[in-house]
Length: 73
Image 1 (cartoon, rainbow, N blue to C red):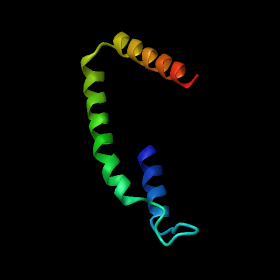
Image 2 (image 1 turned 45 degrees about the vertical axis):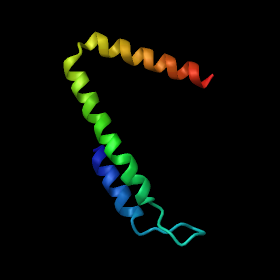
Image 3 (image 1 turned 90 degrees about the horizontal axis):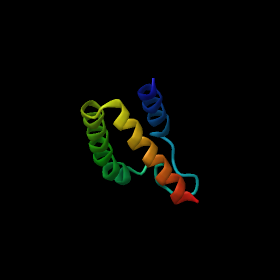
Image 4 (image 1 turned 45 degrees about the horizontal axis):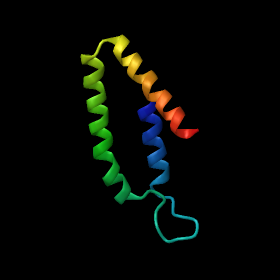
């Protein structure tokens, strides 16, 4: 479902142009920079989720969320 929404959004935005500049809405250079790191992060996350027990994943997520909340305030 999420992939379908992402694909349809990209398809709809492929032909759109920037309102004031003569360039597309999607920055393809930025996509080429971000996408490999995103795929690597997802792969590492899936491997860690399989290897670690559920309680450890929960504790690590809680630590991550507390750290992000402390960083924002």
